[in-house]
Amino acid sequence: MTSRPTNFHPSIDPTADQVRALRDAGPDGPVVMLNLLKFREQANYSAGSPHEPCSGADAYRRYQTAFVETVGDLSCAEVVWEGKIDRVFIGDASEDWDKCLLVRYPSRQHFLSMMANAAYREALVHQHASLGT
Image 1: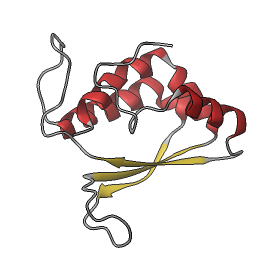
Image 2: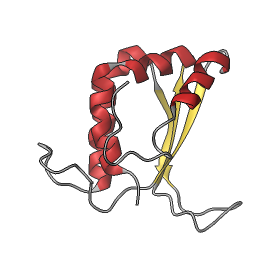
Image 3: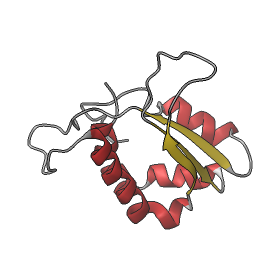
């Protein structure tokens, strides 16, 4: 397992126990992941990063592009819906999410194969730089 990036965040990255639980006892059939995204105003790339400075939203777009290019065929992921969150109807209205993303995978094995892919893990630098507070 690779070491955690300096900007690791438990609400972005699953723990080893969470991955094992999905692997060992997850649902059969398709899996839909709900992603509630809060972008940093400025992406948080580590010092010396070769990536041009940008907003968190732009860094997340880099992640999405890399996601499709590196593991699109492996994950067979399909964006079911994505959009801006305008308001909270039920629940804690103090949560200030920028975007909601629903992604469908044909199976948990597709999702887990994606997570194990080295090229995908390299692309996570953009996700980590883009999200958080």
